[in-house]
Length: 53
Image 1: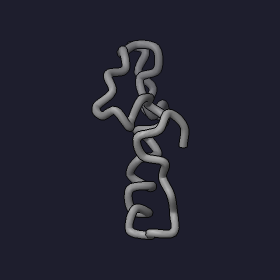
Image 2: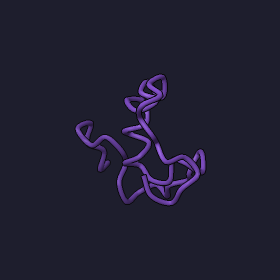
Image 3: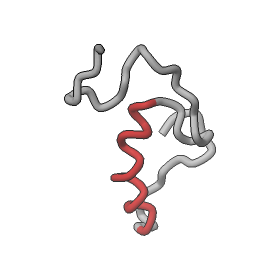
């Protein structure tokens, strides 16, 4: 097949289905685990419920 283990997501072969309104792309899903830990810091504004960060 066309599988390459170095590709983080099967780009172009599988349609993206957002698991959450805040995770709208594969790129945001890739970054989410790192940013979720920052929610503990009240000084960081994540812009939740907005179209842009």
